[in-house]
Structure formats: C-alpha cells, structure tokens
Image (cartoon, rainbow, N blue to C red):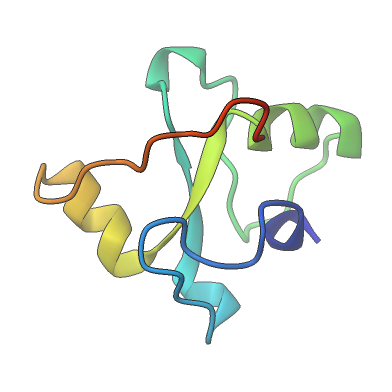
Amino acid sequence: MARDYKGGKCEICEYNKCDRALSFHHVDPKLKSFGLSDKGLTRSWDSIQQEIDKCILLCANCHMEVHDGITQLPVRKPGRK
C-alpha cells in the first residue's frame, strides 16, 4: 500500500520486480520524524502518509549508491509527493 502510494518503483532506475528490494529514502534527514520499514508500524495511515511524503522510493542498489555519493537523487517535479 505504502509503496504503491509512491509509484511502486525506484525513482532512479524504475526497478519494480521485488517489493522487498524497495525502500523509502528521506530526502531531507532533518525532517525525518520516524523510520519506515517492513517491521510494522503502529501509527495511523495519515501520519505514515505524511512521513512517506518526505521520502522517495529507491531500490536497494540505488539507495546505497545515493548514501555513498555515487548516484544523485532525481530532481523532484513540482507538486509531486
């Protein structure tokens, strides 16, 4: 549900074969209120959705490349969540 809300694919390479290989990356870590993971969340959908809106969806490879400075985040289009 949450991954579908963000488009269901990596925003860099468009990988979409395995949902478990996709994760949420907080664009601005200073705005992170809580982490999003497969561990289960006990928060309302509204609060989860607000947190997801601070993120982009990345595959495992692109996510690690972003953290290592190898790959840059895509430019966000105005109005895109």
